[in-house]
Amino acid sequence: MALLQENAMNATAVVTPSSPNLSQRLPGLLLSVGIAVVALGLGKVAPLIGGPVFGIVLGILVRNTMAPGGTYTPGIQFAGKQVLQWSIIALGFGLSLDQVAKTGLESLSVTLVTMTVAFLTAWLLGRMLKIDDKLKILIGVGTAICGGSAIAAVTPIIKPDEHDTAFAISTIFLFNLVAVLLFPLLGHVLHLSDLGFGLWAGTAINDTSSVVAAGYSFSKQAGDYATIVKLTRATLIIPICLILAFATAWKQKKQGASDFSLARIFPWFILWFLVASGIRTAGLVPVAIQPALHVAAEFLIIVALTAIGLSANLRKMASTGARPILLGLGVWAAVAVSSLVVQLVIGQL
Image 1 (tube, rainbow, N blue to C red):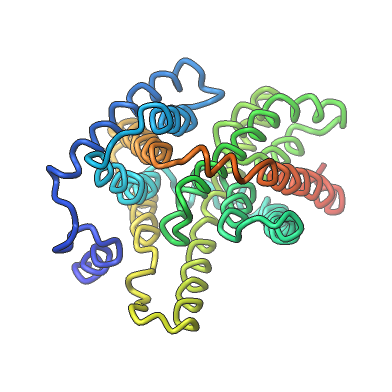
Image 2: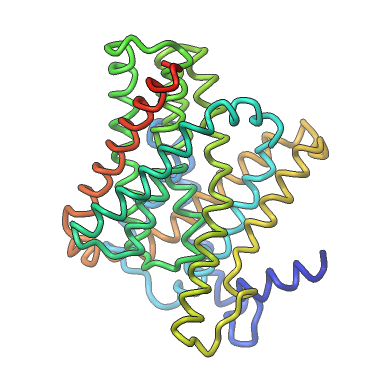
């Protein structure tokens, strides 16, 4: 355990001789936390949008109107990277693996097909639209797995520009909002059963909060089923992160990078996420503190995404144009249709 912890610290470069100290990080951290508190409150008032989206939007607004100086940069960077990893680990304490195993197995065939369709569509359509590879990955992962959380998980691995991360999360949010409003209506038009709609919502809508909103708008049974399907789908971020880590490592080695190190690039925070999930599954997390852990995980994500917003350059985002939105639309539509087709083929509608 000690060795893993040492590797984790080396991998994320939290403490190195050249790293900024706490006093240098404090201004940026306080700015990120302060905005995150406001975003958290707004998210409670408007849960359909949610605190994470408010965080990144407020961060972008502050960055592009007030332009915080270089004094804030170390803390903002720390929050956007290290706090981001802490938030993923904290999420593990809220996910019991055995809780979702049965439903996960039932929905696995549909989930695997929709994930494959998402990644293939992102790759093919992204090439046609001439979109940067890292932005394609972010939109593909966000649509295939779990929206902003998936984007947050792969960001430390592929290391995209901050404005790419912000653009991907904004694109995913746009289609989350459309799905919440459109899916229940389409479900009734298509005469889907409660379980059929729950499986559709759980495999084709990106963010957990949007899945819950759409599911329970259809029916309570659909909402319960959609939520469990979505939680199972979210666990697939683990193998995806590992694949991306090894692919990045192989690419660096092929390019002859002199500082290549698998231990440095390996996503150790995913390992600690598994440890946290194992602790929850073993019943070692007292029921009394589980709500507090959930709130802590949510707030850490908001702080991290706020920091990403504070690093985002709207001019660079604007130069990207409408192509990422078209990519998000194409991937989202492909996932929604493929989920219904697979259910029709296997007789689960």
